[in-house]
Image 1 (cartoon, one colour):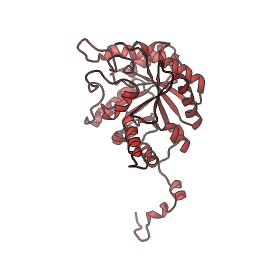
Image 2 (cartoon, one colour):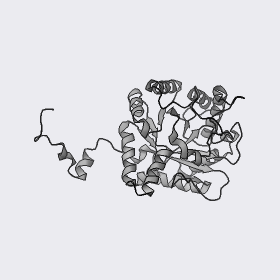
Image 3 (spheres, helix red, strand yellow):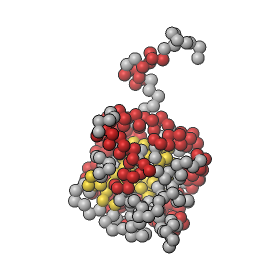
Image 4 (cartoon, one colour):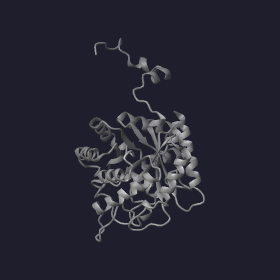
Length: 327
């Protein structure tokens, strides 16, 4: 840089909103956003989630309405989580063709067609009576390989119900390969996989577990989700493994506490990178705003811009429809 003050004045390009908008280096678009939604079997009215103001467990009717509103706002995608009326150790409802999630997928795809990408979370924790992400051994550990069989069956059921993308979130070793083989074998070779490749054992998930009714009944998920203090190379290794198994896109979760990881993953891969702005991130902003401590709208946009600037192509956020309308 040759010029110095007073010739060099960086403030010149910040003088008014039009100038700032013109030279903005980070831009959000509605199509970058993915809206997570919860649907619960057997309820007559949407059920508010106390720890996530503005988020509900949907009925079939309210889910269709919310999906249509997201599509009309230009949101890029929606991802569905199902809460069944009956749970068991195998999570049998997860791949039941008439289970809550498959019914929701058929409802939503019939409602919005190709106007928005409809995808499903591919895991077991919402469906097991113990709240864990897989099949348990007699000693209570998650059996990785037995769980892969369940994930494969769930992914096929979701694809056959109309899911345009599946998103395995359980962090089992080999989950992408097992799902890719099952989808291909069932005639769903064109259904892509968005893998939760880098998912940390985070305290930021608390409110989600109320919404999805999936808190572990004992223990925790530290044996399969990554340690927040773990080496960055471990995260990159998980990404490489998932890509080698056939992942079409990868995800980092949570987002704001792991912006450095998002950046490194973006530098590492040549596929879309998603980041999940999780329930704890959402709840903190909403709680602080309700108390008048922060400017809610500015904080929402600033947090999303930060995630985008870190390198995320796609952002899962509970504010997707609201933000898309603003954009």
